[in-house]
Amino acid sequence: MTKKLIYATLAGAVVQFLLGWLIYGIVLSGFMESQTFHYEGLIKDMNSWRFIVLTFVSGIAMMFMIAYIFQRWAKFDTFMKGLTGGLLLGFLLMFSMDLSFFSMMHLYTKWGMIVDVIVGTIMMGIDGGIIAWVLGYKTKSVEEPKK
Image 1 (tube, rainbow, N blue to C red):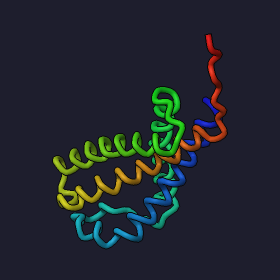
Image 2: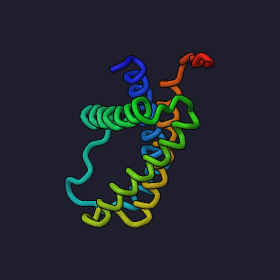
Image 3: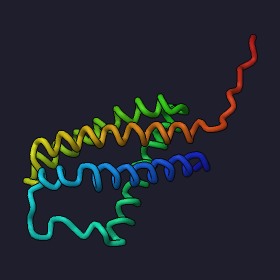
Image 4: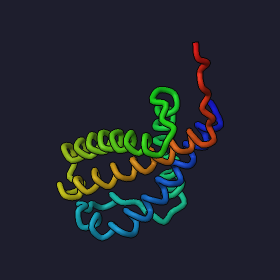
């Protein structure tokens, strides 16, 4: 495992955590609250240390997957490449997960699901851009010798 992979993972996780707090915790909190069906015990205390730590660790796992894909297979090393790759991965992951939850549970309304897919896609795009930028940071391009 390279240092850049670790740095990219951590940078992505921090950005994801902060964006999630800003977008879901502040900007969309009322909307998402109104689009969620409430059951006794469904929502845990979001101000507890456990919620914060586990949310961050969850982000580390997701960002490691993206950083690994970008570094090992896709070779993404610029913000724009990471943004486009992150948008595609984000849409596919969010659409798949949210549609699965929507099909199996009475958790939120269709508008809650649609907004979650859109916001999650945008967040993952930004995360992907940051990850690819970190992976490409100070990477010198080496020209192959001409034959």
